[in-house]
Image (cartoon, rainbow, N blue to C red; front, side, top):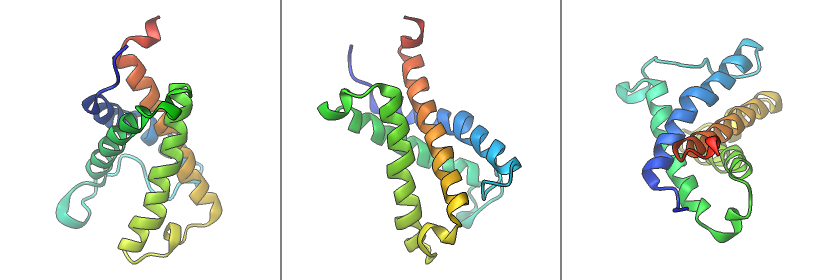
Amino acid sequence: MRRFGVAEGMLAGAFAALTFHQSAAAVLHALGWFPVAPFDLSAGPGGMPALVKALLWSAGWGAGFVLLWRLPGLRRLPLVVAATGYAASLPVVFLFVVLAWWKGSPLAYGLPAGLASAVVLAHAAWGFGIALWLAGMRGLLMR
């Protein structure tokens, strides 16, 4: 079977964000455990809606996953384990450390541990969705 392409990763990342991440965020937000409302269409800096910005970031991270998935060490893991672990770690560290620093915010935006954990959980759901979207694009779910 040929490798997943970057475009497939971008689509899977964006679709998984729209379906899995935002659904997990909706449930967690309803429980009071997630700091941001899901499907947020309010315009942020630059006038771009938050959801559109999240989809663009997710597409980029999805492409990053398929590039990392090409490494022999990662290929030994099941797709769903690799994608879930990836999404719950690298993008979250980037969000909590790099973007927070760039925006002049404290580490993890100063979120209490419970809310920060909910962000990790929503990202893990997003990674699970990436794996399912990638597998679905290849028809692997039907075999």
